[in-house]
Length: 264
Image 1 (cartoon, helix red, strand yellow):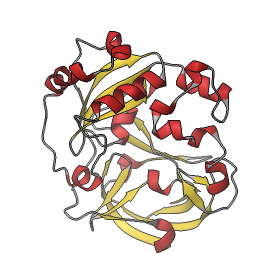
Image 2 (cartoon, rainbow, N blue to C red; image 1 turned 90 degrees about the vertical axis):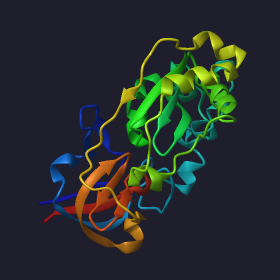
Image 3 (cartoon, rainbow, N blue to C red; image 1 turned 180 degrees about the vertical axis):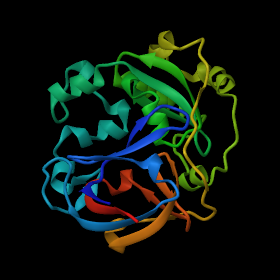
């Protein structure tokens, strides 16, 4: 069977283990059902996730002109402390910015390769943690806008990491941490503006990934450069497909590329 479509972030369903789906325009694949099967990928062309044109992908699945124009790729996406919709100030599109920024946001701790702090919209819990390959996570504060979440993250990352080591995460070289204790320890560093939103009583969320074999020396696949790749799927963690030969494919990192996937 052969599927063709543009790669986008895999959809997930919170269960034990997590269920993963590659979603194309007219079809979808439950990736869990392909574990232990041989898959053949072939690069076809580019397709910008915004304009749809066959133009080289710059970042986040967008061509260069779209990346520097559309609100979905503005600086406040990656740096929420730069959000200004709560002040009525436009960056690229105030209507869009109000829609995204002026809603409940969570500042959280997640343990993937290490304990890290992060920000996500409340509607993206636990999806965001799954996408990062975290096996446990906990909310710290729930604030009414993205700006407050951003300044809280900035304050806390002086005392805890804000990045994931993808190789460590994929090799599963992680240890369980008491995130409740971490939350209590970091409470004193929460900015005064966000302190009233501190979450006092909650517990860790545990996440179980569908992995049969972890890679020992993960090597990243760029399907555009290789053209074709064939391998036995052994696991899925974060947004990575893990293959028997230690090749790993970051679906998020290959967004905007049209591929064929043949199940052999």
